[in-house]
Image (cartoon, rainbow, N blue to C red; front, top):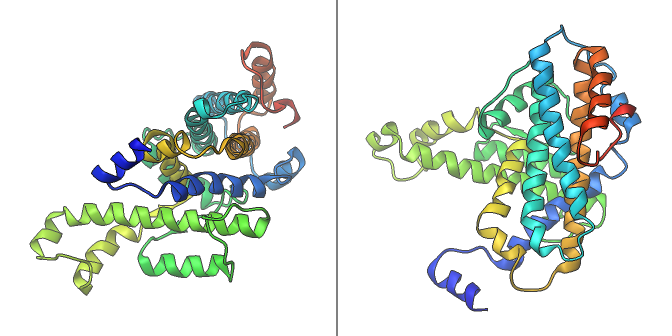
Length: 317
C-alpha cells in the first residue's frame, strides 16, 4: 500500500487497525447502550418533573430551529443506511451524526435558558453547566469528568470502571463490553484535553518566566492545574473530538486498505441509532420547556412542510 507507506515515512500516523477500531467500536458501544432505552415512555418518565419555563418566544424559536437541524441530520444518516457500499458516504455520515448531536444539544440549551453559544467549545462548556450538571441527560450520554487533572481523571476512571476490563480495541458485543469501550474513549478524550491545555500553559508567559521545561515540579503542576481543574469532558466534547475522524487523518483508514464493508454498514447504522436517540431525548426535553400549545403547532407544521422523512414521530411526545 503505497499511500500508507508514504504517510508513515513522512508523518506521525496512528496504527490503521487501532484508528479504525477506535472509531467504530465507540459508536458500537453507544448503540448497544441506547438500544431499547430511549422509547417515548422512558423519555417521558425521565423528564416528568421538568418544569415548563416562563414564556420566552425568542428562545423557543431557537430551540425549534436547532431541533429541526438536528432531526434533518438524523434523517440524512437514516437515508444512508440503505446504501449498499458505505465507503463513499462514511465520512458524510460522521459529519451528519456530529451535527445531529450538536444541534440537539443547542436545542436543549435554548429550551433551558435561551443561551446561544457561538462556538463548539463554548457549547460544550454551557451544556455541562446547564444540562449535564442538572441531571437532564440520560445514560450513556451523561458520562463526564469535571476537573481533568491527572489525579482526578485516574480517580474518576477507577470509580467508573469498578473492575470493568474491556477497552476500545475490542468490538463490544454486550453491555459490559460497551461500557468498557465508552470508558476508554472518555479517558482518551480527557487525556487529549489535558495535552491541549498543557500546550497552552507551556506557551504562557508565567510558564516561560518560571523557567519550567516540564510539569514535574510542584510549581509547574500548580500552574497547569489552575487550568485543568475547571475543565471538563462530556458527551459534546467527545463528539467534537470524534468529528475529526471524518475531517482529519483517521478518515483515511475509513476509506483505504482492508475491506471492512460489513463493519462499516453496521457503523452507519450505529451512527443513525445513536444520533436518533440523542435527538429524540432533546425533543422530549424541549417539549417540556417551550410554550405548551406551540409544541403541537411545531409538530403539525413540520409534518406538513418538512421535505425530508422525519426519523421519529414528534406527535407522540
